[in-house]
Amino acid sequence: AQTVTQSQPEMSVQEAETVTLSCTYDTSENNYYLFWYKQPPSRQMILVIRQEAYKQQNATENRFSVNFQKAAKSFSLKISDSQLGDTAMYFCAPGNTPLVFGKGTRLSVIA
Amino acid sequence: KAGVTQTPRYLIKTRGQQVTLSCSPISGHRSVSWYQQTPGQGLQFLFEYFSETQRNKGNFPGRFSGRQFSNSRSEMNVSTLELGDSALYLCASSLRETSTDTQYFGPGTRLTVL
Image (cartoon, helix red, strand yellow):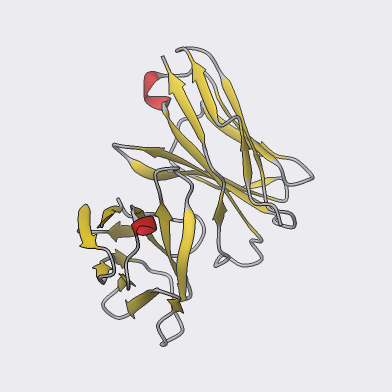
């Protein structure tokens, strides 16, 4: 069975600073995607970024980027220039449908 | 394109009752997956439907069931509700042309069982 570990239950960061959320996983699949979703207080799950496992280049989406280490099965999310609106739970979900999520990291951005 | 919609958004039921939740996927999406989110267990997969067929099922009792209609809309049903069924139920849709398709989530239905 696939396992996903997010080792940081809570984190905080000053506005405009950079923060990195970690995620490690175990999977037997060869071709898969990896996803980061955010869940703000509204509880709507919003796709932040996705990475294709067979691509060596790390994905970037505006202020969000990933550091994907396939051999180490590590998939971290870096948020640059943090904004108050980034305050949310962040879930890592590596693999294919059906998704298996980590327990999440609660990120607070402080003014 | 309109996003995934779920109805109702909030629901209060009592133990022993049954409940039906509805999910309308993004236009063109043929796959609908359901997840349960609780503080203790986190996000857990319930089931996935594709073209009116259940494709995957999570580890939940038979009280949890679902179906998908020809227009891809999906419903899930929980019978004989228990207190532990109180949760946020999230629906996600995808094209599902491959197993790597991205899932897009609805706003969820908050179920409270008293």
